[in-house]
Image: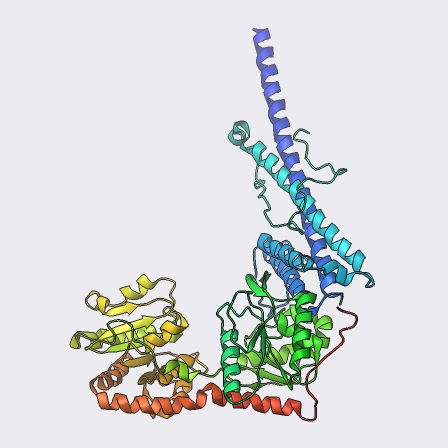
Length: 210
Length: 377
């Protein structure tokens, strides 16, 4: 009798601990995915600002400059319409440019940068100008960071969605009010044949157990 | 002249440049146009290809533009060989050849702005880079008041408004669509079907009244609509098969449509600054029935070159259009009057206005030269 009670209590305790561990894991995953999203936002903003610096540097011809500036402006408007822009996304009243969803606007910037960078002899025409090599390297670095941060975020989002969708998590509503993370899809390869493998030294894959 | 958009893609700016260039050539001037174009596109003898345009995201859609140092050096070479008296760039605010031409050239430069863009910070942001190019423009032309506002806001200074012309000779003759206009008479309409200011609803109401008494009368409607079915359902079932919707038509088919009807109707209820479609119908020698708005009253010379009816009043339209359908002589009279009246909107006349701008900017100057752009190749 007492042994049965102990067994039931122990079982209940075990289930309780297990469930709370699962809930805690889902919660931690959500927090990690949020942080990854913030990191992705930062890399996108950094890429925009470096692209703008290139556009206004006077290194490029005016048409390419205007093209890049237009794409940068598009990303800024999209950040504002997304509602997470803060001070960066401020657009003065009266401004009526075409607003695009964030992923499309960021892909537009990728394509504008790619169009600029894939001009024949693009590098040769700039080399020797003051600050040109550094700025180009910075743009490429920023673009690569976007690629890395987006992959990291999407992997985490996939793990989180999978954890939320387990039968127990759905039955007991373990994810609470947290929204399922959306994947962020965009064109982010600066050069058409960018290697898809991450460089050595970055830990890319989020661990699926924590 | 510099065209910013690919020559092989149909568009208003390209058409403007083509018509203006041909009008100037007809006047005996030497004209060379440089434009992005695919290598295998057949070009008119006065157009020089500047290479393939690159599709890039621009203003929320994909545009085919020419930019970069390579394009700039092509423009430079063209300027060098051409030894032009005046350089005329179109849409210098678009990141393409026109902007590059301003950048690499010096001397008399005229710019035409076609599209009105809302006050944009993109130009403001890049202004330090663009300034050297844009400040060289000596003469500014806008094709509409709205475009003029854009120009003045973004580049300062003032601009003359010279509207698009009508290449009247293109409209003069065309093969009617098979079976049109038919013995019972036909009325034509061109324009967006679901934009209320274009006034198709007024014409359809009038047709409801006219139709039953005239069993052969048909309506030929060409233009875009989000939902053409919905437009058709506004017509009573018995008359529906006498309303023919063509959808959006090509430039050539538009002219054929104009030659397929007996009377052209412009029922616009407002928002029209010139009424280019009405002018094109007049150039086809069509008797026009138009609503009594300022733009049409002006084009139709207060009713001498076409009939006016009270704006938005379907019954008045029935009265005017019915009388015209019954009176062949009056139609012939109006046709002749329309052809005479539209002549002053012909490109040859518009081109003279453009020439006057050229004349003011070349005063005391020695022609277009290629400028050093500070170490750029």
